[in-house]
Image 1 (cartoon, helix red, strand yellow):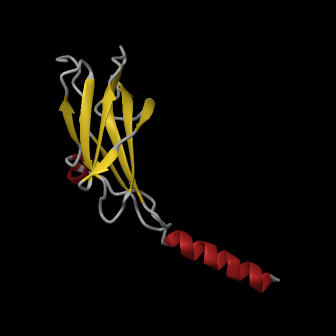
Image 2 (image 1 turned 45 degrees about the vertical axis):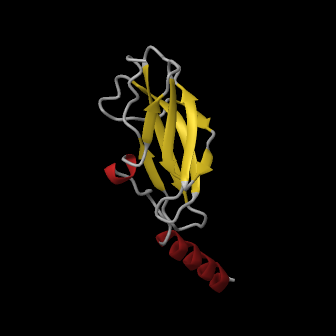
Length: 132
């Protein structure tokens, strides 16, 4: 019985070594997010590669980060956005709801299909809604 428990423990430890702790991220990925103003007030279009680093399960969220986050962006509120894949790009539109204490941005994740593979995370710059 001890042998079986030891084998199971070793298997669990060895598989956790191969798992991904942090997704890939950085400016290389952030630059892939294109946001375009439309003629409608506070309505934007996004174009994002539907696949990144061999990952093709894409999730796009409109996030709202606190204004006082000292340069960091984190989603205090979020809304999952729908899109269509056209010529290898995810294309969709979204409406920014102006909020007094929150700043809007897009948060994008390309998820892995299998365990152990790292996903890719990207985020846009803060969306400037003051000129809309």
